[in-house]
Length: 471
Image 1 (tube, one colour):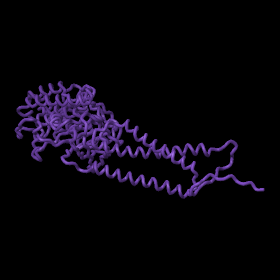
Image 2 (cartoon, one colour):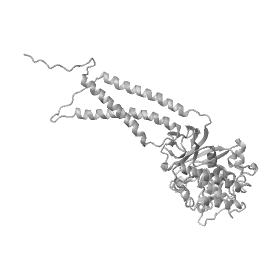
Image 3 (cartoon, helix red, strand yellow):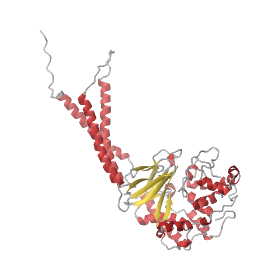
Image 4 (cartoon, one colour):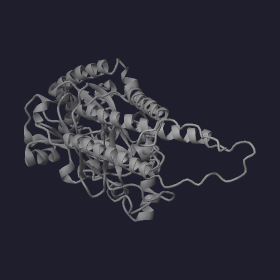
């Protein structure tokens, strides 16, 4: 007599019994809860939110984390389950069952990701459009990236100095700049922005691809040779933050950083930029002092590649290019003999046309930095002092339009006003970033008394010129 098979568990139309459905529901709930936990706790390790864009981007990323957490737990869970459930039993040597052709499963795992990607695309497009759309009253700043340094250009009125100037007595380059649009172009190694004021950055590299990235602002944009790219952000918290290059650009890529300081209002912004403008409109009479100030400001990437003991306090410790210690002696002897140029021509061309002559052992890494003509001659005059004796071994004669007779009348009063305003902004910035000492933060807003005193002495006697270096 044939045996009667045991009754099958109750199944619904889909072929799944009640136990299986319960297991699927429970697993689904666990996956969703796990994704929510990942999406909730992971952002706690992110940098502080310091811009309006950071809030929007973090909200979008939270959704991505939740979905990604669910998918991660699902895939890893199925992997662990499959390893345990379908493992080879003791004594089994045959091949496993050949299983294929589950149409329902294929439809499900194709449709669900397609819906997720479509939704994320819409959300991402909305966030991108909101971030990149022009804002009312936004401030335009130019960012220049070069291996391995950032600098930032501002167009500011002479009125931020808080006094009247006789334009005809200002340095010729400043007169030409003012005649163009009534504004002066300032270049800073630190990015200064104002809280709650929208900013648009116009960016272009001098050499290779770089990536402008402020983690606290959640903005990142590539700088592409031959193109001007833009990025927009609105700072929401005062303090000091960090700009990094997020694109591998060479040997010192990791050192391509710059501070961004968010000040409270427009008055603080003017006070922060005032010392830079003062050096431009009230420069020392001596070209070598102007050149030293320029290189010490690190607005150009020279310090990231070259070593110069005289500027060690300004972080001139690069090792990609040749050291500049004693460069004046070499320019007057071996370099002049090798190039057939005068020493001043050699130094000038090394800055303006750096690949025309390569120092033995070094490649063609230095880009054309586009340094203004008169600034190049100031740098040449300073480099001419880098000799064994400390005295220039040759004469540097700049073009007539680059000759500066000294600061205009009233410089002393302006210097005092600038120092007072700078001290005020510096103290506020230190308080905003937690009271860190100036030496630790290298805050450019803190006045260097020694430099101020030396500059004051130099400008007090505008006719004092080095014996062998023409102004």
